[in-house]
Image (cartoon, rainbow, N blue to C red):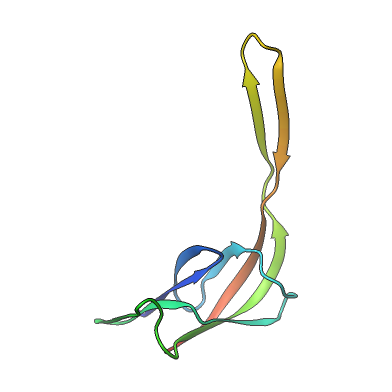
Length: 104
């Protein structure tokens, strides 16, 4: 089973063809093709190729499935006996990508 390790949005992802991954927001519309060129490693069965830091000429192509926002988390700050309370919500934006091909 071949897989690749890519870097995008300051994070690393281990992917296989056909995976749907949630990554940090990138520009693009649904059904648009995107290419990841920061490929750190590719495994093809027993053979593992690792870049320093990236593999030359290796790319991963995918298709944007959806642009969205995650579930709301509540950030609540509190200091006892001081009357200090702050409540704030946050929804992290994401891009859902379907991995179509590992080229390398």
